[in-house]
Image (cartoon, rainbow, N blue to C red; front, side, top):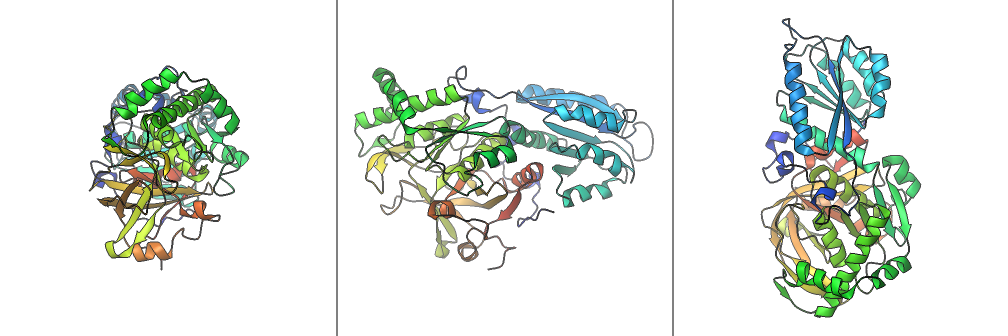
Length: 480
């Protein structure tokens, strides 16, 4: 049984800003990238539909014509999203559940619509859930009394999200989450240099076994060779178009240093295309040139660029990108009890924190703070913005802390991009940092990732689908 340290929140209660992902059209990174024809693309997630129960004019059963309404709803959703494919549509009965269990195995996920029935439904539907696919069960009111038995699957840790609701838009939200495990198992992650983080996240074999994603090791020499092959004029054009002409101001770096950073981005882009990769992390990102601008643009486009070889944060960012369409900001946080805040700072930040289709936040081009060299970003974040601070640890526990941005700062003692997030209890967060689930060095213990939006509720559902625990770090239910 999975345990959660967060309070159940209704999707309908989520802030409009935090839930913008629910209503948006397809935002998959390979669709949003400016050169979508070159970037690696993942196939649509295949979701098998099953309708369970008799229909018609009877007690606690939905009318037969509702089947056609569901079919149209799923067809419209498929067209709107553009990155899912609904198959099946079998009705139990007359379909035989044992035969159906074999049919659904070829899908990425399972969508069960409970139409009617009583206590005998659970053993029948349990045979489909036991196939092991990430599963959503949607059960409207007046669909019989069988719902009382469905919670057993959740208690047993089955990969199922239970939606007892009259709101059909819950299906839209759930389908967006069903894409995540489907895309994770087809993802390729480049480790440019030795990976860092928890032992499990740094093991390519364990990442493959747990999520299906492949981790590809790439040497620094290969990246340097690719960079030598980039046309200097192309690098200058890239720097001018994306950085020089868009910056609020440029403080320390020279024009040539910014062009060199753009040259590295073009080399990494070529590397990701060659390797068909959706994410990259590097323990060489403090080299010359530094990887700050490279990772910033990758994150702007909807891919993942993670600094310092941090594999735990890379996987976190990839899941959030697939689920919610927003980039993550890797941070070295500190706690300020006086302000009830966690203060975030780092020198690598996306400028499109709302996602690839969003507007860029104002930014200044600076040096990196601790080395006083290279090219980094000072991004001006939005005060009042709901955020979720999170980190998947050891492939099995997601730590998260929801809050809002309460202020920004430009302290010379910290990395360039800085903002403070409200937290439920700063003292408890300080005393329970890591919730005793993180083992490792300073970076492993310290790093977190911040995302625009309040995703506490959908992350809990994503944990159900993918089999990881969710703990609100320093939350009110934890004892200090």
